[in-house]
Image (cartoon, rainbow, N blue to C red; front, side, top):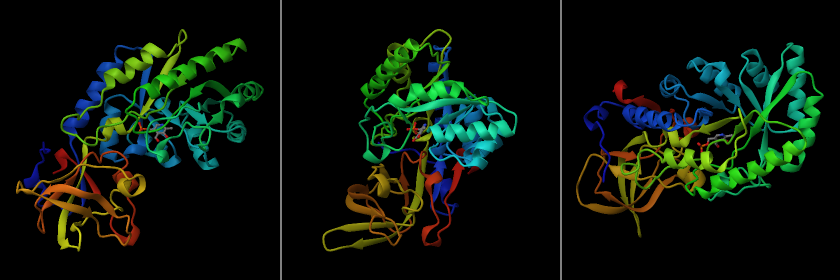
Length: 385
Ligand code: PLP
């Protein structure tokens, strides 16, 4: 099954560019909101890192999601898109003073702190502004996720978060600080997780940690389980909207929330992944000794996921239904890793054909670079065409 695109409208636009299917984004947001409506203590934040296109952010803000940010730039992008500061959470292992001050000046909901040293700096900076910063501790739960090694974050060997056995002493120390308030625990075990038992494992670990804290009479107002829900890169048309029903149900059934506790989510890829495609043109067909190459005008500078994570994206020739041939689909960048896919079947392509690289709405446009002095790709929503 091939995706449906407004190909006539694409002909006038300089390639490569990102095309965002507005209707799919809206349907995805509606599904999230319908599912979450069953659980009044659940609050969903959108992980801005996945796609910070201002128009995309605007639609997500209109659907009433909060924002999860990992830099001052993302906090500013969220504020500019109209996300209320009291729905902004801010994580990151290396927050600079300037970034912390931006969060403090705007009274964001919460800093997800990743080390004792960071908490001390936040306390100092908050003191100088006569403020009290709300802090959740990002705990490294040592829970593995069945995903690519570069996108697991919750293992003891990863740089993220505070080790579980440091959690309680740090909370006790925070109680002695005048300008920080401990308001919760934060977790994130990784990204592109399709094995739902990974989220179950996280629930069990959080239950244990909460029991442990209760023995020390420490109560927790907020639990934040991060993001990580994966999408089906093989079949964007058959599975355009992730299984949010099952995802939220896992947390509802396995996480023992205490009375009055709020459960926060930080979903990125699952919100925006399937609505986006990178649209490129075939520049040349080259017959190698053993291979046939389709050389596109898009490269790893536009979509780095295949080069960075060996990620697989479905690729379609949206200009032709000719019988398929086997191609290595590559970009023009001077790097051997600038390959989108090897030995795939594509409707026979010729110079000028439009090629869609699917499921590229998350970690696509936002990770683009200008390497080789290339222009950054533009992102268009359906109504922009
Ligand atoms: N929250 C944190 C702390 C993250 O690091 C990430 C992604 O790496 C996310 C949320 C979003 O993850 P995903 O796009 O997999 O939902």
